[in-house]
Image (tube, rainbow, N blue to C red; front, side, top):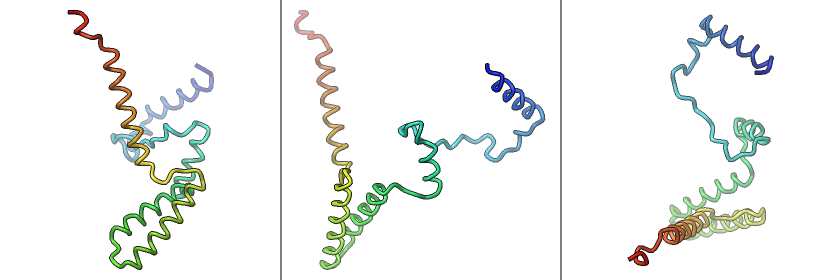
Length: 135
């Protein structure tokens, strides 16, 4: 253990003995950890600062607006209103595509999932020895 680590540990243990950690808010409750495992280590602090400030990446802002317009389109009753929403929706999807992002990730995610399951099931059948050949 480094000198700095041992000094820090001594300070923590002394604070525990004095009872300074006894009445902290949330004591005894599970920690609410952020799931940022997919974010590279060097970007985690910057992403957390932006998220805490309420800032969203432009791509996510576009996706949220697209989602809102799609739900609005389902609720629109007038043909003129539907045309207006469709026009705005096409514009946002084109803008998202111009940025190099797919418009509907769920379709691609489902297709990927199906290919993965198919490949894994084929691999399982290849790994299992043919029982008929042993007889």
